[in-house]
Structure formats: structure tokens, C-alpha cells
Amino acid sequence: MKVLIYNEFVHEQHDGPAKDMYPRGMHMAIAEEIQKIDDSLEFSFATLENHKEVITREKLAETDVLVWWGHMRHHLVDDDVVTLICDEVNKGMGLIVLHSGHESKIFRKLMGTRCGVEWYERGDHGRIWILDQTHPIAQGVPNPLELEAEETYGEPFTVPTPDELIGVTWWKGGEIFRGMSVYHRGLGKIFYFHPGHETYPSYYNPGVIRAIDNGIHYVAPKMRIDELTSHHIQPHEP
Ligand code: ZN
Image (cartoon, rainbow, N blue to C red; front, side, top):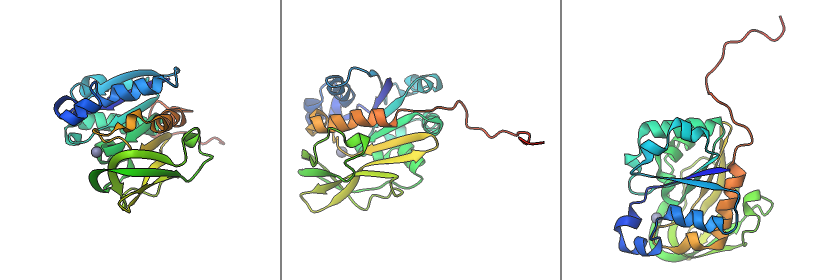
């Protein structure tokens, strides 16, 4: 299975604490941690710097699942690339949107809403309670899944009602957040998962990695179509 990870890759090159936490970038940490538990995936990578060259129509056509992490530079992601990605999700490609990717152009376009959250950052303890223990993404994930320190994301989260709500996060500060959910768009599935602020160790947390790995398998296409156009046809019965 082919997995393409897009990471903006700006914080880890320029901000001390993020550099210390993920010296080779979050994309590398995510892939390396997943490879410890799953050898069935073939990873490739794109960053803000090279995304126009890497994320082409041809590349997406052979990608089963795209994983997306972006934060401060959403506005610099090329609009043509955004259109290609949204079309490919509608054709069946799987998409995983992590953490601050909730503000990305692709997530907002696919959701059709503003996708805003209430947030603050003080490294609080978060606790993800699994609501659907039968869900494939929840298998092998501790319940609750403890996040030792994270950026707090709270409600209201201005997204459509999730098609599948897998977990809800409780925060020390009193907030809650629907941060583990699946949306269906066209033939594609989108898994939104909130852990992963650049200065906290969530992508070294085995439960978080297990959920992302399960998510990759869950949103991977069972069926894929080549085009999205309408067709004029003759009646099936004369
Ligand atoms: Zn963050």
C-alpha cells in the first residue's frame, strides 16, 4: 500500500523546541514509528517546499492514502494541488488530516465549512475516550488514550456532523473535542485525528501511532474511479 505524507516542515527547521522534538521532521517520525509495527506500507514524502513538484495527478493516482500535516503556511499550498487532491478523494483515495490540518485548504474544501476550533497551548494533559470500541481504527488503541502533553483543541469545532465519531478528547482545562472522526466524500474516506502539535511527543506515543496506522488501512480505497464527469447515456431498456 502506498502512503504519501505531506508535512509543511517549517517549524522543525526553524523553531528550536520543534527541531529538538522532531529533528528530521514529523513526516519522518510518523513513518518510522509506523514502520515499527507495520511493514506493509510504502512511504513517500512531500513538503511545502516541493509539494508542487511531488503532488501531481500521476502521483496521486498511485497513492492509496495521503496524510496531511500543515499549520502556518496553509495559504501557500497551491490551489491546483488542492483541487487535484479533493478530486482524488472523491474518486476514492484515502485522506488522513492531522492536528492543525483542520485549517488546511483541502480539509475546509472537503468539509464545506470553516473547520475552526477553540484552542490554547499550555502542554495540558488530554485523554481520548473511544466511543466506538468496535471501530477498525480503535483496535489496539488504549481506551482511554492518554496524551501526556498537547495543544488543547475544544468545541465548537465547526465541521459537519462526523459520519463516524470514534473518540472524544477530554482536557484538563475542561474542554472536550471531537478529534477522532471519519467523514465520507464521494468514494473517499477522510480520517481527522487531532494529536500532533510540533513541540509535543504525540508521534512517539504508541497509541497515537496505532490509531494512525489503523486509519491508513481504514481509509485506503476499496474501490477507485478514474474520472468524475457526468455521462450522457442511452436508456437501459429501449
Ligand atoms: Zn499545534
